Length: 236
Ligand code: BTN
Image 1 (cartoon, rainbow, N blue to C red):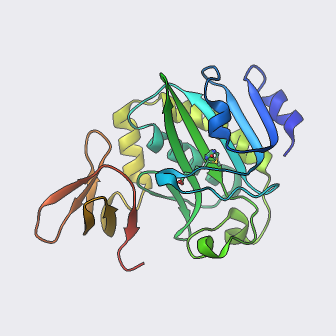
Image 2: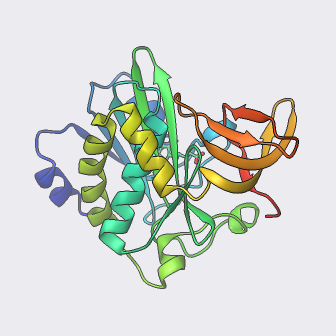
């Protein structure tokens, strides 16, 4: 990563860079609004639902940014990440509600939003130049390099990502919901299985409700509102 170029291009922004850190999320807590924490490697990277985030050195983008909380921030950051990836690499992305960025049906990036005091810590992990994943992840994870067969510049993607975050997080909720519904093949008409605390829900997605939750229409015609993740394409 070309840190000098990143700092020069994003002059005026607070960027704390670590070669190795536990989690950029932890380091970002308590930092000022707009503050960015970036790492080359995480030893305790966190994903949603207490999962870990595979964060090997020299290959990925591991970033946290301090933002104003908003109800659809996870969706906005997913849109920003997909936009940055596509604009710099030409690779088309799909969005799986609420926080997965998929390429070729596999997960290439993820979003984690955590609330700390009155701030949101927006965490973004992008698998850029990974060539292998640990056995447990190999079936569902991918990288831009694995998809395109060539390496990409993490600096370029990062320099597209920060302005994209600014743009998408400033949009109003309805605009974010509309853009997400357009960009995501999972938002409607997709047969899915969802792991819920009370059991498994299977049905066809029927859009996002006004709060940004996913509506799944079950085969008996009733709608279930999905409040948290765990959405998978049925049969996958
Ligand atoms: C997910 O898909 O479950 C969310 C993954 C979020 C990973 C990023 S990497 C940078 C930031 N620091 C972390 O520990 N997690 C997020």
